[in-house]
Image (tube, rainbow, N blue to C red; front, side):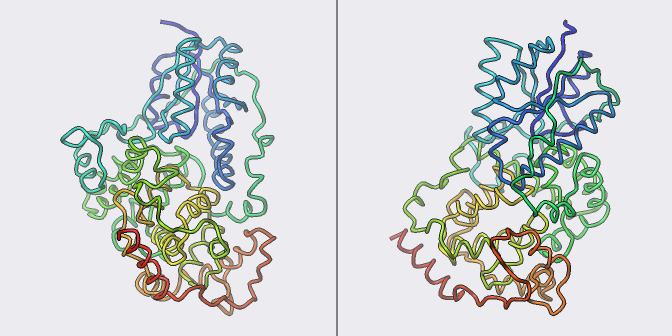
Length: 469
């Protein structure tokens, strides 16, 4: 037993409830040092996620302060910072919640190895996922490559109830801290930050309110509404899960309660939560998925690298309104409806024959709910190169998809100013958020389609046939 301080190294777990590390730290009775490190891995985040992370850090610091604990901010390599803070505070332990993307695993493995030899003593916890990726196995002991069997394997599993947030935290004397403003996490967002700011819901309290609001109403019609981008029919919790402002066990148990209360669509909602688990399951077992084709036979596929057509796609100027509305929604709100993501990704990789990594990298720059596993899984699913992927011959037609899922063109008009005589504020906000260098004008004519959809489909199918010949 010791009364020496503990360092709690926070990363993508910026909450107090459903937080195994915090619960055990409070139970230990030891004085605590809360620490966030702006290390090279975090510095590498794209513009939107890094800006949004800054908002989450500020909110979490306020939550900690209300319980008597300061959040110390330090910049530098994680190991060096941890050892320095331990020396300053006398801390004999460093605890953190595990992450599973390759960059985080490499960093954390090196940190843990060094601390085991040199101190302070390291310990890692679950909390980012419902199930540790290595704990879900097939009957033969392997990992799952297809979602549906994965879902069946975990659907009935016991999941620990989420721990309540503590009401008090015992603080060690706080070491010197950087100023969050000096980190300038939003610098790369430039003028876009002011636009997107109106559409984010930051912090643990906002995340919990978002969950309760969704389960109190929209979940009842989730199966149909989740595919309609003009309807507010989804939870929006991807933004909060990304930064750990809400725990997956909190969502899991609340979702099952809703199902048992007669809201049958809640099971489909829970499946979407498990898609996140499946993505991390695959990242753990096949980490190359985040940067390379999951199926190596796709390495010779004749995708184009970055190109002028892809640039028009990035700018929301393809001439396909469903695709362009999706891209503009991302610049205005920081997020993109899931159905629209599929259409935008399919169009880039198939109609424009552009490598999925071009799109993956752009989403990593622009999405406030960017997640390394979900982003990789989504893009490779759309391109056909990944596990559980859409067959390559399934080429979404943006026009017919729009007729089916946006029949009154509400979503398209909402975000494309050129489609309306009196465009609304959301459509006009795109021109406030986009880089000035694009020099686009809401009064300009909407562009003609870049490619004939039938011809683009035929070209993609010809390439697919060549790959299999």
